[in-house]
Image (cartoon, rainbow, N blue to C red; front, side, top):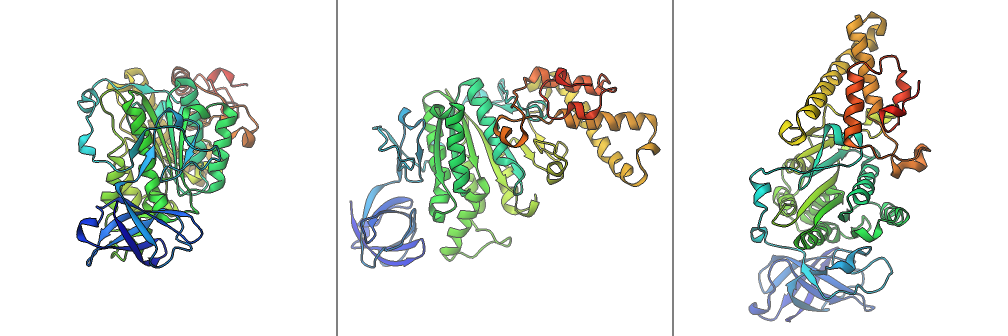
Length: 462
């Protein structure tokens, strides 16, 4: 351990000077100091300057941090506790419990930053071996955008489109049905959401299967940035125990946004788009750690806030280049009351492949997408000239598409308070069967409202 002194504090950016060159800590090593009043503060080294100085980012509030305060180099990167004791607990970016349940009783710890070249990949997954479908019980996802164990799925959407509800529903269904291990990471989101999420897990009885790490929007940018690394470190630990892990992150865009704040505070010149010049490498450092390896997999579901509903935003484009499936939430679908508000024509999935999901499922899904594509064309015509002007064949297709869209809505467990309907889990087999019946005319005599917010097709009432 080497001693230094704080010589500059500008918001969350702190400069520390050391006595000699050999005392200078490496990049990303932790430095511990103390604010006036006794509050411990962890700094992370991000730059080496001249004259034995280092520039650090604070992972906590720098309020009352004084000039010449003693700073101890820890000689190691930030380490967080890991182990079975982490289930049901909430930690912050530096591994401290924030759930008021006392100290975490575990002897194991792991650094939050890691060289990914040391990870041994799963040869079956790397060489395109047999994929295992992960059923979510959500019709729209299972039918058109199937989840594969070890894949990455992004839920993209602007404000108030239901990203958090969709993630909560997926956690409820998958953790309860498959009894898997789950890690939830909250990066830069509202404190209220984290609080509600925790008590929802307690209410549903799945809190003992979930590890949680929160760096909420009231915290400094350093904490909001590093929480992503903290969360993926918890997932990697479970993976090393030969477990298949579900990794949820809400919200990846906030992680990028905090990186942009840090970059600005450090005085770096932004890129043309206004984001940090290190945008691609920062997203890569995080996303490349979510990978399958021998013995275990990490299946990631990531919420991505889309600023101003602009899918061409450079940060959003950088993030979804790493995703296997992209679920784009539509504001128009929300206004029509179609939940989940996934736009099937803008969204995409590399897992919708006959080699993965089977020929029957693939054919029905493709036929459904074909009908929905034609419906979008007809909808514009109907808005101008009315439905009566359509040919009989087009009117039939138009009606089937509307019924299909209604059938792909579903009452969620996580939204019972809003819908007044009990949530339902729908198996993949029932989802395929219901869509097949609609596109083959078995629902032609049914009113379209009868298919709205139901589970299986058989629940539709004339």
